[in-house]
Image (cartoon, rainbow, N blue to C red; front, side, top):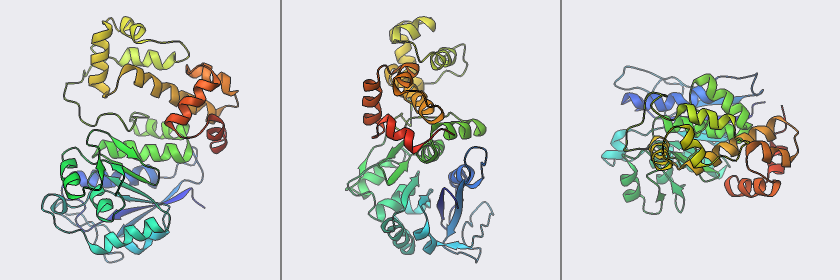
Length: 329
């Protein structure tokens, strides 16, 4: 028995251009390799192509050929369906997506699958009508086209990913990795997702609301930027930290610190601190049996009532319900 079946859609033109292969590789890396020391059972990954068993899926200008024994009909049996980028011709030139793909996506959703798109995969979900009346995103270079072609979709061009419960969408490239790790966090908890991210040498958690495109340059060296002070803040979340405290430690004025953190992360210092505190609280709830009051204290969220307020607002569940869903391992 697996924790869930993840079906990844592979159309015939995946792999043209090369960054499509990157987005195809993301769910394969996150969900396809068993991690028995983190969670056992792990996910069961299936690549579902338009030419199952015939070697027709995944051909392209890079000279690659993908053979898979699963077809689009198998999407209906999956717990999660992921659509990576669709061919550029379907986005830029308006070429229709394969009708059998759209039908298969609708059937999978009707069967109860969680539907996920990476980058321009949102065009496939939108064509299937699964984004109507929902907030969604895609790569910022294509969000205007998505909004124009599908006016019933509430397109947010600025965020990394959108979690709308049973339908999730992400921006392009590394934002797809953020969303896949977010799915692991939802399914298996923050500790498992953080350890998996560490093995992949990527940030453990970039909130979905973080900006996907930042105009200002980002400091590349820790001694020029914010790395040391942010690491220090993560190690001292139980303290009543303020923007002034962090700015002083970074040897900056509060205004300069605010501007540099927002340029580097796309979020404000207070929002960044809240995200870090919520992450610490989730880890403590998963991995310890500490009282809720102590979890609030160690994460810097204060009283049990304050912790409950932030959990309900950000996660939609109480700390107690979250702990029951992810018992200590």
